Amino acid sequence: MNIWQKKQAITERLAKAGIKMSGKNTFANYGYYELSDINPHLIPLLTEFACDLTISFDEKLATATLTNVEKPEERIEIGRAHV
Image (cartoon, rainbow, N blue to C red; front, side, top):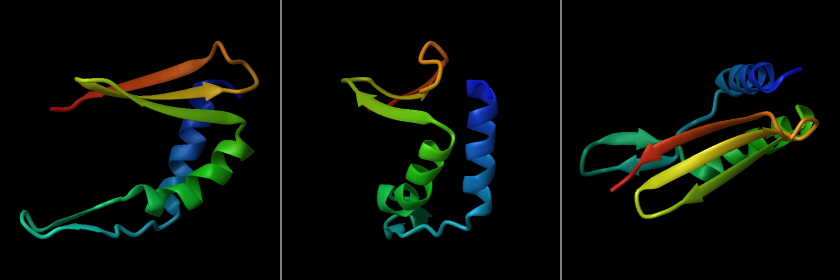
């Protein structure tokens, strides 16, 4: 499986997991996922699909990198600007 196929399989399984949002923003009145909501579901999937997820931060950007452990040159990087 290439990195894109692994990403799709992990994404599909997470979507079907029925993960509940435990975070609550009472000011703007919305819920959000906390890391503790996702990790128990994500970590076994990363192991099953032989992937590593690394998250890094700098002053302007948060980046998530999904790496295929079987072929480390296969990576998907997703960056998100933050203020």
